[in-house]
Image 1 (cartoon, protein in one colour):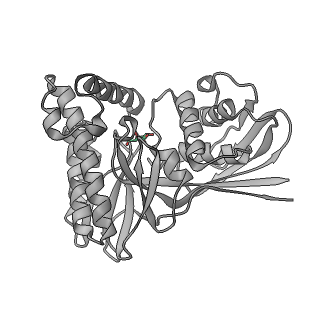
Image 2 (image 1 turned 90 degrees about the vertical axis):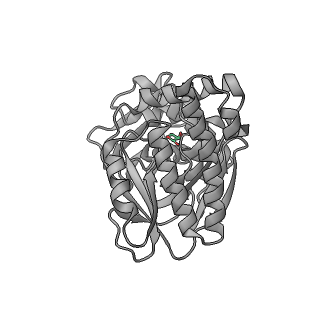
Length: 332
Ligand code: GLA
């Protein structure tokens, strides 16, 4: 029996560094995919990848995914450690989702591997398992956005996700909207700085309680200026996600785009996760004819800019379409 699992990448339209405080995000699954094809057999998971020179060879009893080599095999190992399948697999990883461009190639790999190895459950359960796999593989205390967007994508729709309740509602993208991504290069310092930002949010919550329930007035009660800025980003970002989702629902691209531009400024000035290259692309594209908004997308420190424009507008980068969720099929 041959099992083929396909998982899309994701781009986040708005709502970054909110998921791990139970906040709101508005990503979409995209039409660039990772494909894992296997035969279920043996007692190791052996995968070769069209993106990598060395194979991933992971024992079913793997206990420390972060120690596995080569580096890409850690994500496979993370899934194996969480899923604990009874049978191994031999197969391949392929697909057109670029690795390292900030489009969640690691989360797509995790979701595709989990499905190929026989994961059976709801999209939220799949996302939770793969989030834990990512954390064990990379040591980064990531939130659930990437894996949940990939597990629950809806073609033609963005996904308004409440990361506190783990509920997903699909928001139709207006037919005149075009979403593009511009890769600004590899991410630097991303993992240590990510953990530091998350810890700062937790420190702010020690003072004012859950950020998901806070408003801008509450944030002023935080004495430490750095923690106050971090908290202000999260609180205002949640409000912008709500506003952008509402604007998209009524076809108001200008309002959604303005929220994206404000999001970039907040990620740059209050959350300190932008780079000169990301700022430069955002500044350059946001005033182009037909562009409604642009911002860094994902964790920051490099990676991609997402652009919301009118269909047909001349924008740099690669156009992406909102795609459906990860799937799995078997054939003899
Ligand atoms: C990375 C993480 C996500 C999320 C974003 C920032 O992509 O994996 O969980 O925290 O950064 O929004």
